Length: 358
Image (cartoon, rainbow, N blue to C red; front, side, top):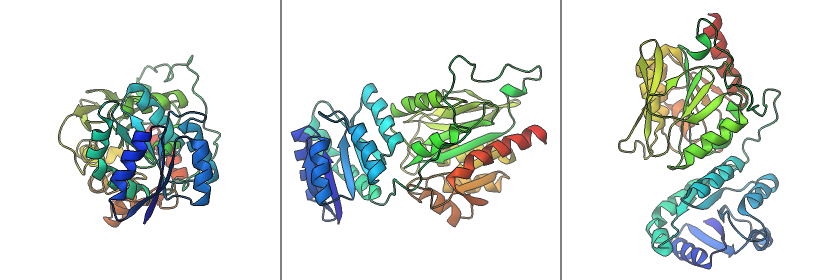
C-alpha cells in the first residue's frame, strides 16, 4: 500500500485527487492539508511514501517546503503544476530541488482534467514510490563556479577554429532524478569540453526553462536545441519537450535535427532516438552516458552506440534516484563501464582531452 499525502491550497484539488486515488487498491491517501505548515505537523504522525505538492500556497511556498523535506527526510514528491510559463519555471526549480516528477493541472475545467488523467497520475505515483530522492547528495567541487555573464561563453576563436568545432560528441540520457544529476555534471565542465547533446524526459515548455537555469549556473553554454543547431565545444543542447532530437553529420561537423513524431518508449523526446542517431552518424567519435531514470528508454540505443565503437557508461545504482534505465543498459551489455555520478564530469573531460591530444 502506497501512502500518499496531498498538500494543495485548493479544496477542490484535494477533493478530486483524493476521490481519484481512493478507488485504487494499492494507494491510500493518508491525509491532506491546505498549506505546508499544517502538512508537516500531520505528516510527522504518519509519514507518507509519496507527497503531492502544489507550489503556490499561503504562509510557506511549496518550493521552500520541498527543500526542507529533502534536507530533513527525503521523500518522493510529485509537483502539481499549472501548465504555464511561470508554472514551468517554478516546476523546474522544484525538480532541481529534488522533486521526482511533475503533473500538470488546467486552470479551467480542473475537475474534468484531473479525473481524465487519474490513470496517468496513479502510474506516476507508483513509479515515484520506487525512487530514492536522497540517493545522491552533490558535494561542492572546485570546478563548480557561477558563470560570469560578462565573459563570453567560449574562449576567443583560435585561427584553427578548433575551439568552436569538435569531432567528438557526448550524448547524455536521463529521466527521473536527471535534473539534479545533469546540473551536477554540467556545472563542473570547462568551456572547452566536447559538444554535448542531452535528452531529459520533461514536459513541453519545461525544457526551455531547464536549459536557461543550467545556462545561468554553468561555465559552458546550455540551451534548448533548435532544428539544425551545430554541435560544438562548450555547448550543451537539450532536446525540447514534445519533440525528438537526432544527431546528423553535416560535412566536417555535427548538427541536430529537432523532429516531431510518435513517442518512443512512451517518451518524446526519447533517449533511444538520440542514441541510435549518434551511433549511426558519429560512432566511435562519441561518449554515451545513460543516467538515472525510470523504465528502459536509452538502453537499446546505448547498445547500438557501443556496437558502433562508442565509449559507453551507465550510472551506478548507489548514485541513482531510480536505477531503471542504467540497469536495463547494463543487463543488455550496453555499458562498457558502470560509474558513480561523481565520476561522470571527469570522464567527459578525459574524453575531450584525448580528442585534443590524440
